[in-house]
View 1 (tube, rainbow, N blue to C red):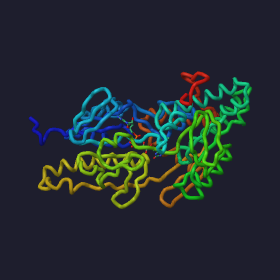
View 2 (cartoon, rainbow, N blue to C red; view 1 turned 180 degrees about the horizontal axis):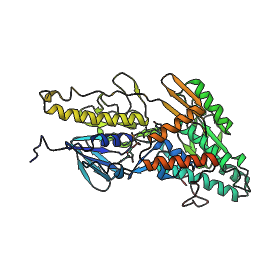
View 3 (cartoon, helix red, strand yellow; view 1 turned 60 degrees about the vertical axis):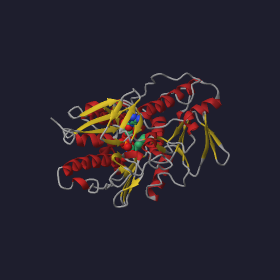
View 4 (cartoon, protein in one colour; view 1 turned 45 degrees about the horizontal axis):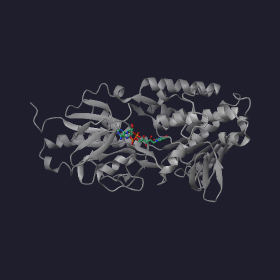
Length: 439
Ligand SMILES: Cc1cc2nc3c(=O)[nH]c(=O)nc-3n(C[C@H](O)[C@H](O)[C@H](O)COP(=O)(O)OP(=O)(O)OC[C@H]3O[C@@H](n4cnc5c(N)ncnc54)[C@H](O)[C@@H]3O)c2cc1C
């Protein structure tokens, strides 16, 4: 019979995103661990392709897969769909919205981030974020419904507002979304309307900094801007938003912009569960863990992915990207396995001191700029244009989980590319004509 020392350790993972899923996969079928993965949704989401769902190039199932299905062969992993509402580090329990209480020996908090508004949470009401499948579907519904309403109205001012998409934030998400919106509107939907002239549709990308894609090389920021402008996107740098109202943005210089679709891609905030950990967080709510990814004062609680703000063991900043989250999830699994091994040796007392420290391997950054162009940066190496787009395409397909997803994404893309005709354009649940921003 198992005693306390040999009983499987209860590992509770919150979040089936890149970090949590990788941790569960790496612990799969190791019977020294009894793993429970909690997620508020039933799917793992490939966020890098969300913008393609938002702009009708892909359908939602193309970029998501059931977590239960992914882990079905992992006999020691239980997947539960529950939203965690509270963590008690001292009791070593977690509470779910369903009322469930889950005890743990080890906790891995990998619940990701949400759209952040720099303390102006009221702006959320009047804008659309891009963090979940629901968000992407809201944006798509909003854009397509606005075009339908523009085709119906005879009021010129209203038509102008309906035909304007404002995207706040010139990072990769904003740039990719702006390029894809321009492609959708100026190429794909060109011949679909009779009353409105789609050439008059405006996609406006608003960025507070002097450059868009500011983490890329300066020549890449300039390339991205020029490329977007060629696609018909108006790029406004050094433009600070001071208020987001329903259908209207206000700027620091006193000017304003009327846009029925406002997408907020300017910031992220860590999942609010980080507050329950009782450790210091930064302004975005992110935790700086110890170098082994445990949190100060709690060697059995780990954090991983987008809700961290840290440097690795070599002092390299760890960015909020999918490869970093995956590497963190894998690191924690490796650490736990090693820790259990040490417990059976004469080093058992020093198991916490002997933990491996996290090292981040930079896999580079990429952003796609409309159809057939991208920028790529790996260390000092940079690449722009069509070759970077091909590299982006191959890497993203390889990353997608599961053969079904890969094949359907590939076919969908190829089709849309050849005929310039994105298929996922059906509006399900159209908003009433007077519907608020949320679509
Ligand atoms: C639009 C967009 C484009 C991106 N493009 C790229 C890109 O091109 N390349 C790249 O490397 N990275 C990209 N990223 C970033 C990348 O997706 C993230 O860095 C990565 O998803 C972080 O992984 P994570 O595991 O920390 O969190 P996530 O992947 O966000 O997973 C968190 C999980 O936790 C679950 N969860 C949240 N709260 C709770 C709760 N209370 N209870 C239970 N479950 C909960 C969520 O449902 C989710 O499944 C992009 C992100 C976005 C939003």
